[in-house]
Amino acid sequence: MTAAVLAQLPTVASTWPRDAAGEFVVGGMALSRVVDSVGGTPCYLYDRERIGQRVRSLRQALPERVHLHYAIKANPMPALVAQMARWVDGLDVASAGELRTALDSGMSAARISFAGPAKRLEELRRAHAAGVLVNVESARELRLLADLSDAAGHPARVAIRANLPFELKASGMKMSGGARPFGVDAERVPALLAEIGVLGLAFEGFHLYAGSQNLRSEAIVEAQQRSFELALQWAAKAGSPLRSLNLGGGFGIPYHAGEAPLSLAPVLNNLAALAGELAREAPQAHLVIELGRYLVAEAGLYVCRVTERKVSRGQTFLMVDGGMHQHLAASGHFGQVVRKNYPVAVNRSAPATEVASVCGPLCTPMDVLADKAPLAPAEEGDLVVVFQSGAYGKTASPRDFLGHPEPLEALV
Ligand SMILES: *Cc1c(COP(=O)(O)O)cnc(C)c1O
Figure 1 (spheres, helix red, strand yellow):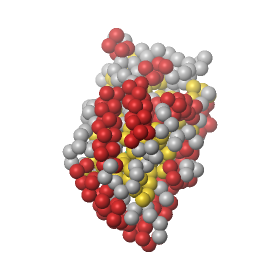
Figure 2: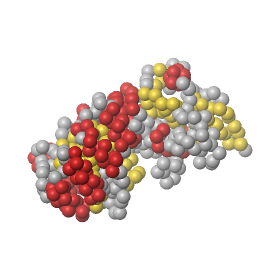
Figure 3: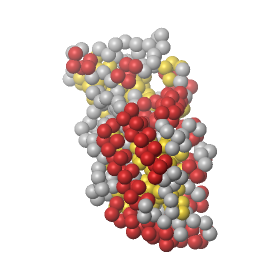
């Protein structure tokens, strides 16, 4: 294998622990044994202790005034959310279905918030009845919540989700700046604040989410600083004191060869400075950062099995029992502009001495889990692992497409 191919070897595959036989270890057990215990392939496996380490160390590094929330759309598996509820300060949901999962997890309604465009009346009714904080994204949502509050005799808890007047630079998914379907345009926030006062809703603060999957700490720091300044200006015009200021998140993880992990120290230092300023300016308020993939993605594996080894005109294909219908993101069709491989590896101790493509069972050229990746030589029956798969995997994939069975899922 050439030096160029070797240089592309994903670090996560080379650093994931292996046992003496060369198998990957998940939850303290050899991968093949975990797969047998789960019921076979294809499956998603989430390493509980890895998630715990990530969340606990981040929680410890954050000032008390900064609350760490988990955005459950990244991975809404109920067992995982219930585990997470014991480690984080709050949960963020984006649908009534996620709201149910969050409430079932044991997290108190006081620490759940609900954001999402196009909320239906029924969803607002459920959020208000449960007593969670609603991040309102339009004047329509405010009025519906006011009607529900009048009818029920208790005011809805609301924060304004604003469409910021700037973008999150270098972000994988931009969700603010310019014309957006998310939130209320920044210039309309003062009018909405006045309306909240008239309607008698319980105002708590602001939700400012600039974007996702960012690996550049300077960009995150800049967005958080500008969001903070804007929010304090708005808060001065609100009829009641600021209680909660959600500065978003967007912490990215390295998916592809050549990507370096996010440098967290500058972000943490900035949050500590902002928390100090908040303590002086709005003593009853706290900051929130809401993270999805950063907390769970790197602890998750998608595991499939080689059904056939095929050579076509000199190129090797490992045909596997999983594919894009279960892991859309790894196939390159979930937000990527240029398709790049996720880190993949064969569950064998042998070095990656051949180049092979990993393809699934769907009759479409899109069903590629890895394109010409450096891999250990694999045979029929071998397990193939796709790393960085703990977020936007199972529930972000078109699982009905072609009618194959559902992937299994376990927290180990
Ligand atoms: C999707 C989303 C998140 C989670 O994004 P990650 O990139 O997984 O951290 C958090 N908040 C909001 C409002 C979102 O839409």
